[in-house]
Image 1: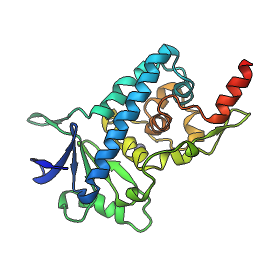
Image 2 (image 1 turned 90 degrees about the horizontal axis):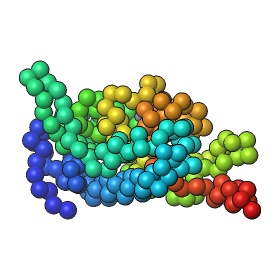
Image 3 (image 1 turned 45 degrees about the horizontal axis):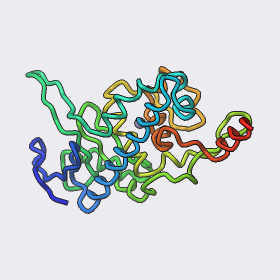
Image 4 (image 1 turned 90 degrees about the vertical axis):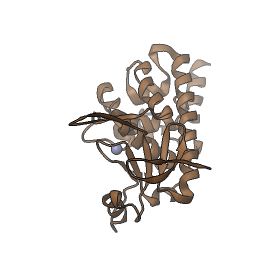
Length: 240
Ligand SMILES: [Zn+2]
């Protein structure tokens, strides 16, 4: 893992992962690189399923985004995968910056606010987008989460159409980072207040669901088309 250039605006060495920059992560830089690569892979699996299903979407896209044509999801999903530059507007004009993942640390005074926020004794904060910047800051506690979602984390669909379990899909390193990348590329148009619980996000209107990062998190953790076993069995039985 080579450090190939420095973040001019902060003057710290960075690790490069595609167009993303990784800053202040030390030995966790490789983990962040790995997560970005996984997000890229998962996004392209989701996009493939969008292509395969056409405007009606997959069972999973309908669950998390209502009747929205999943092609509408595509540009945002692809931006999180490829990490195009973030353009910031200043009084004197515009500047374009690499999207940058920062690990909260005590040696960068520029991010002291986030470091302190992560350190607060009752804080459960995992990560946050520094609003209006190109920075996503990860708290160290995130690295103690499981790295990737597993099928055993998935929700079960109950007979009444509600879900059981599944919340742990949003509690992985991949999900935490991806959640903030959705904020970064939604810019300031995220749903306010946000909705986090699986049981609540499926009740959002389609227009709200495409602005709520957690909807994308559960969708991506399902790679766009993962159908829980019980649901699959129900479908097969219906077809017999
Ligand atoms: Zn959020």
